Image (cartoon, rainbow, N blue to C red):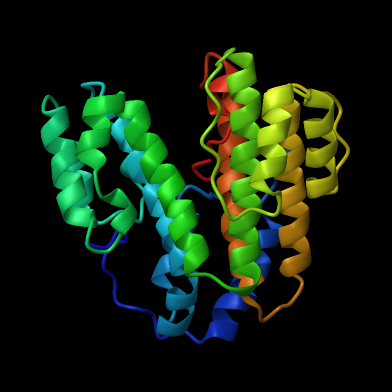
Length: 293
C-alpha cells in the first residue's frame, strides 16, 4: 500500500498552478511572533489536489515524507494507548486505511504488525518493524520509519528535490547529536547516510564531543550565523538555511523548487504557530518536528 491517499491527478496546467503558488507563497509569514496572512493548515492537500500526473510523480518522495510524518505523529499517541488528536490527521495525505489503523487503541503490537504488512511491499525499509517494536519499543519504530523514508526518498530523487532531502539528512544528524549530548547518552547515534556532511566527520565530532566544531559545520552548511551552540539555536540556524536555499530554488517561476518552497514555508509557518501559541511545555520537544526530522 502506498502512503499517499489515492486521488485523481488534476488536469490543471503546471504553469497555472505555479502562478497561484507564487501568490500564495508571498502571503505566508514566517515570523515566529506573527500569524501568517493565509491559512496554511491544508496547504499540502491544496497542492496535492492540483498536481498533474507529471508533477505528482516528481514530487512523490517529498509527499511521502509529509505523509510519513503524519503516520509517525499518530503512532506516538496510538502506541501510548491514546487516540491521535484530530488535528494530526485532519489535513494529512495519509491513505485512509492507514489513518484507521492509527485509531485502533489498545493493540499496539497488532497495529505495528498491520502497518508492516500494509507498507512493506512499497517501502522495503519497513521490513522487521514488529521486531523493532518488540526489541526497542515505540522509539525504535519511529526511528526506523523516519530514517527509512528519508533514505528511500533520496534514492528516488534528483535535482532540487535530492538537494533538499540531503540537507534534511544533515539537519537530522546534527540535531540528533545535539539531542543525545543533552541527554548524556553514551551510545553513538545511528546517523542517516546521504547528506552533504560525511558520516565519518560527524562520528568523529560525536566521539570527541566537539560542540564548537559542530557549530562551525552547521553555520557553514546553512550559510547562516549561529548565535549559540544550544540545540534550539542549531535548529533555527538550519531551518533558516533551508528556507534560504529554497528561496533561491523557488526563483525559477516554472521550476519544481517553487512548489517545494511553498510546501516548506507552509510547514514552517505551522511549526512557528505551535511555538507562538505555547502548545509545547518544553520547546525542546519540538526540535525536528517541521518535516519529521
